[in-house]
Image 1 (cartoon, rainbow, N blue to C red):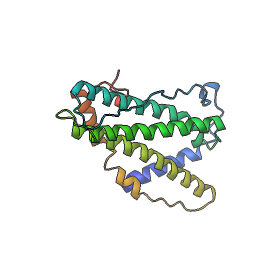
Image 2 (image 1 turned 90 degrees about the vertical axis):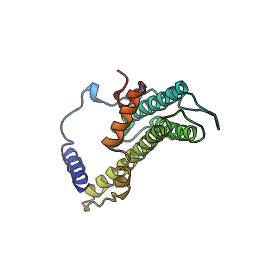
Image 3 (image 1 turned 135 degrees about the vertical axis):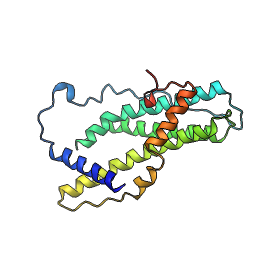
Length: 200
């Protein structure tokens, strides 16, 4: 795990050192005006119900597709933040909305799979998907915070210190093994989603 941390740190430092790489072309300038925020997220008010397989497949697809759409919608804003530029008031509102929808999407799916009887073979894998996506979202948020702190420390000529315990904990859930299990499950159940490059 130390090697991963040092690799990330070196990549971060190298990218920070090469900021003066040149002018951006019009195509490279981040445009947040055309960001499409999903109008719907996963939602179900079902409780104590028996879910059939078709509904479950549709629910997983909706949850993962929405996750991917929200992730892609947040990317331009994260890029602006990473470039240490300020977001406009409108951009901040959009980013807050994306973050709120991401949390709601995660919470709604977790409640759905926890409060209903799922088809045989879906409970464990649905929980794996939920844990993975929730942990991934939390890890991305924490990583942004860590990188911001590293940047601040480097700008102030302070030796950076990083608390990697939380990120290390999440790496037990967000890793290649877990992702592969999810991808195999989606393929076996013929669930095509935008996430994990399943939908072609």
